[in-house]
Length: 103
Image (tube, rainbow, N blue to C red; front, side):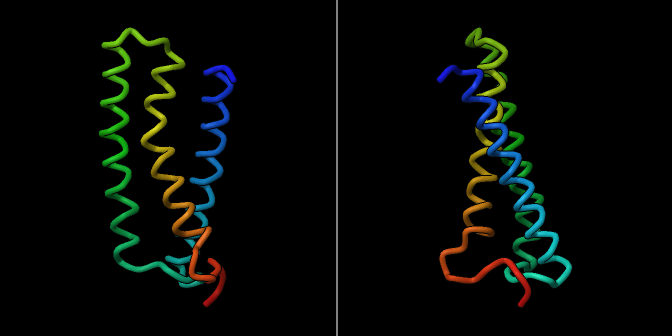
């Protein structure tokens, strides 16, 4: 699979996971779903900051390495993709048998 196609698939997966996580967190904040607490609210802010720092570092490293624009984009997307995948698994694909639906 070419880098371009793989990166576009990675982008689509990340966007799907991010939208799912946003939905679950919004329902939780409204009291319509399980698993939303103050820790989750803090995570919503702090994880974005950490991913942005990592992404910025990857962009800088890609520029220094002389990578192509698509490779730089792929490197920059990876920290966000890793975070959205972890959130998706934790909030949407819960292992404890709970769903993200009403209490």
